[in-house]
Image 1 (cartoon, helix red, strand yellow):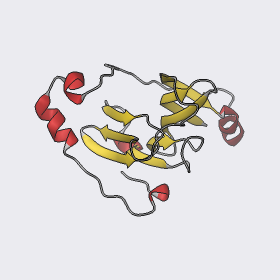
Image 2 (tube, one colour; image 1 turned 90 degrees about the vertical axis):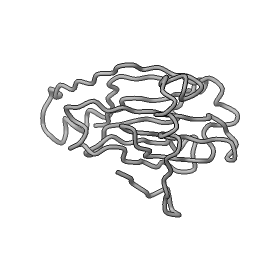
Image 3 (cartoon, rainbow, N blue to C red; image 1 turned 120 degrees about the vertical axis):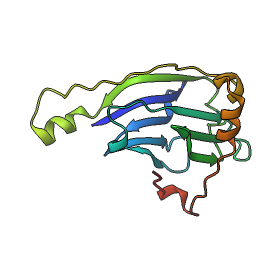
Image 4 (spheres, rainbow, N blue to C red; image 1 turned 60 degrees about the horizontal axis):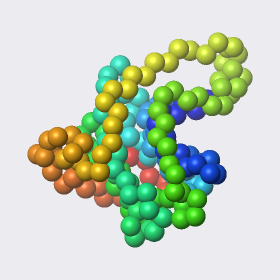
Length: 166
C-alpha cells in the first residue's frame, strides 16, 4: 500500500506533481513522472528516525516550467536533503495548484492480498503549523536560522534519477 502525507496537485487536468510519502521504511520525496522526465524517489528520513517523534519539513519552490528557473529545496529537521534545479511544473497545464495533506492511502488491496488481513492497521499523523510565505524570513521569523538553512548545499552524483539520500 502507498501512504501519501503531503502533496501538491495540479488542477485541470488533475495530476499530482510532488508528494511526501511513507514507503518501504521511510519518508520519501517523490517527483511524479507526468511533470518530470523520470519518477525519482528521494529518502528524506529513515523509518527508525521517523516514528514517534516530530519531523519538521521545510519546502521551497519556484513552480516554473523553464528548466533554468524552476527549483525545489527540502529541509528535514533543519538539514538540507534536496536541492533540485530544473523544470518544476508543466508549461501548459500547471497554472492552478493545491496543497493537500493528511493520510492518503492507495493500493490497499495489495496490503490485504499480501497479509490476508481485511482490517488495516491504525495510522496516526499529526500536522502542526502548516503555513506558507514568499520568504524564509517571513515564514520562520528568524533571520539567523534562515541564513543557516539557505547556506546549506548538497552534492549529488551525475545520475540523480537513481539517487536515494538519507
